[in-house]
Amino acid sequence: MFRTALLRSARHAVRAAPRYQSTIARPAARSSPFQSKHIAPAARFQAVRCYSAHAGLTRDEVEGRIMDLLKNFDKVTDLSKVNVESHFNNDLGLDSLDTVEVVMAIEEEFSLEIPDKQADAIHSVKQAVDYILAQPDAH
Amino acid sequence: MSSKTTVLRLYRRSLKLSLDWAVHRYLWRGQAMYIRSLFEANKHITEPRMKRDLIRETEDLLEKWKHPDPYRPPTAPGGSKYERNLPAPILDPPPKMTL
Image (spheres, rainbow over the protein chains, first blue to last red):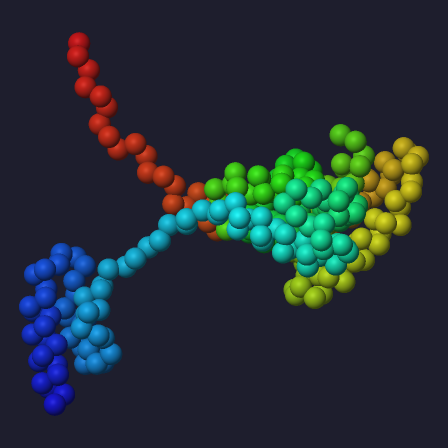
């Protein structure tokens, strides 16, 4: 029974092989008995690796993540004031050192490094969102 | 550069430096609060000479505790992903010249 299964998978492999490029089809690997049991017939020749490019961040996503971050910040007391337009100092009542902490948290959230000069210029949610959207390597 | 900006940058640098040294986040949290209290303690100083001394003292401290292998974000210069997957150079042949 084991041998028939192996033969069958080998036959499938031979039949299916010419349909694909030789660089991506690997009949030898697929005919091994450990793999042929688990692989559904449709997925038999998916030896192509799918690499995906970074799709970029949408504005809604960036805004949502920054606002979640601000809502979890313990010095923001009035959660109803956290919106897209809110200013860290005027609306949320954060002082300048808190603003530094928020900018650091934003850096960690999007895993990038904001240079000092640009970090000094971020005082509101909108400025932060604009900066993040301008960065190609924000995650 | 005003001294406020300088102090903010120093605060940022000291937070990052302590994050470099801290092994865990919960340890860093206490250090961050301590750093914050140090900065808060000198909040009301307005005399320029004292401010300058404090700034210099902080810079000396930061220099003394400089980390030999600081954390770099992957895509920043010196990071592990810096200049990886660059766009390909222009491979097209040059346009034909009619002389």
